[in-house]
Every structure is written in C-alpha cells, then in structure tokens.
Length: 446
Image (tube, rainbow, N blue to C red; front, side, top):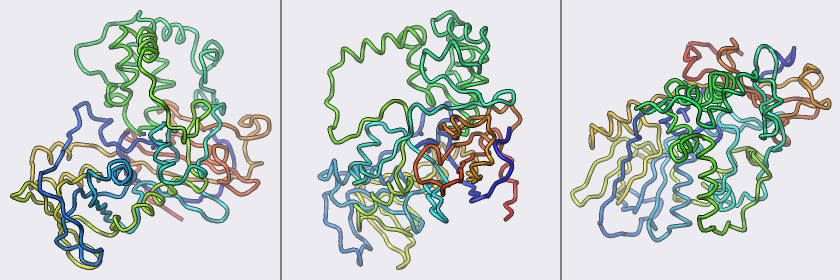
C-alpha cells in the first residue's frame, strides 16, 4: 500500500546491524539460542599515570575501551563519572574519524534524518546517560497516544494501545482474540523441553494470529531478525519469564506485580524527566547529539582514527595493545580491555588469546539493513491515511506475508519536531533483514 504518489529521496544508507534495542538493539546475539560469550580481561598490576597526549606510546592505562559507538561511549562515561577510582587512567579508541558507530544523523535543506537507529526507549538508565551528558533540555519524546499501525490485507490497522482497545481493534479476528486470551490464561500446550524460538513461544501461548499479525512484523521491523531463529528468552526475556514464574503469561503478570509491590522502593533520580506513557525518545538535533556530547565530556580520553591491530597478554597479567594511528604505530599497556566492536572484529583480534572465544564470536550473524529516508509533499498523502487532516502516529510495521519489501516505516516528521520543512512529510523506511538478505545484491542509483 502506498501513502503517496510522488516523492523526493533524501538518502539510502546500507548499514550492517546486529539482531537486536537504542531503538533497533545493537547487541549481536538475538538470532542465537546459545548464551553470549563474555570476556573479562584484568590483572593486578599497580596503576600509573598516563603520559601526555603527544607521547602515549608505551603508556600504561587502567582501562582501554575499544570502540567508540554508543556502547563504548556509555561504558567510558560510566567509568569516568560513576566509578572514577576504578579506572582513573581511561582511554577510549575508535578506528574511524568520528564517534557514534551506527548512529548517524544528517541535517540538510531543512531536513533532519537518521541513517541508523531512529530513537531509544526512555528508560531510567538511558535518561540518566542523557542527563549526565548535559542533554536534559535537548530531549524530545514522542506522543505516547500516537497510534501504531500494521499493514494487513491492504489496510493500515491500528495496534491496541491499552487493554480497553482489545475487543475492538480489527487487526485480529474474534477466534484469534479468543485463542490469545485463553492462551494467556494458561489454556494452551505446555512448554517443550527445549529453549523456544520467538515463533514457537508465541504460537503456543497466544496463537497463530498474534504471531503472524503482531509479533512477526515486530521482530522483523525492530530486530531485523527471523522469529523462527530468535531466542524468546534472549529477545523477549521479560515475557518469557512471566510463564516461568506464574505458569502462564497472565499468572506471571500478577505474580510480577505482587513481587514489585513487595520489593523495597528505590528512590528515583529527581533529575530525570518522567515520560507520560509508552513512547520513544530522541534529541532536538537527532541521536548523534548523545555520542557527540559524551565524547566532548571525555575530552582527550577519546582517540579517533586509532585502529587496533593486535592485542597480546603480558607476563604481569596486563595487556599490550598496538594501534595504527595518524601519528604511526602506538603501543599501550593496560590493566583491562573492554571490547565494544562488532563480534567479527573482536573475533580476529582475540584469536591469538583464545580460539574458543574467537570461534564463538565469529558465529554471530549480522543481517543487512538499509535505512531509506523519503520526503513527500503533505498534500500527496492519501486522505484515508490522515487523522484530522494530519499524518499522525509512530509508524507502521509490515508482516512478511503481505508481499511488501519494506520492514517498517517511521513517521519521522510526526514523531519528533523539526524533522522536515513546512508542508513536507519525512518517512524513514527500513528494508532487508534476516529474511531478505538479497538487499546486498541491490545497486544504489542516483
């Protein structure tokens, strides 16, 4: 289903994203049923002060964070601000000439668009990171009452936003709703003796319609993954746990509420804003504001265009890191190393230290995803797609069964302010994913 009949293309960017949540989670294990490999490297050598920035070769650090994407930056900021005594001599290295990793915000010709993740869940840890970075006043949150849609049988159908909507939404049939209700109460087949995929868990507990019309498009649009391979426990751990603790999804929900009410209340940080309902967040000038702000606060601790070429273990338990830098080869010695790079990069670097770790890391799969931002004149939008004359909503997800290549579309200019010039609509579309790896064979034309 098309919403418009003419468009102006702004960008097409091919990005390799791990299967995973910033809003499209960049943790590369959602398609794997095995437990993630965790590598911790540390020793007990005594700390020493770093040499000056102009003479780092041979310097001794308490910790080196390898990778300047959002994970590495958040770890470095947490160490610098929350645990300054644990790693007073901290360095973060990034192989490219900018921080942010997959986060790429572009501003041009009155538009502001994202070429990677589009938003984040405004959880307290995420809001804390924003506030600690000095971005509290730059936060923007989507309207929690804005509808979400699923394209089904040629029509955009709203997804229920609250329990009171369940009897009336037309995305599912009455038999499908009854099957989901009975399953949630525990009237369904028992759990099997193996770890279930998302598809197996949802079909067993809630029925085929919930899976095909709600969960499958969510997995494809948010995780870019294959729900027949995604681990339910890894991808939707909170829902998986409900059945474990309560015997059913509803039973587990009541038990979780009881446990939460009985648990001691931890005071919430008074600095944090309180989102009004379920929504997503960004910043006034896009997501790139966060990595740039963290990098600015870390200052000279951040080293750009430093490409790690090798790592070796020292006799004293520490590590020696050799980098290719604009100034030539530089060697650092450190007590601990934190890798926040793609798993295939970590695999090759760690092979001299551990074949087991390297082999495990090499197995993670990164499905290809393209982010395509498109602008339409406001009057080109079909009237049936408008609410009170406006394109309102978070966006739409598209089940693979509907024969549309797009995984999902985010209504960028409706979700956050100042994303498009007056009279224009900006849409961010994601294509590709684990079920459409043919995106790699497509050729970009201008």
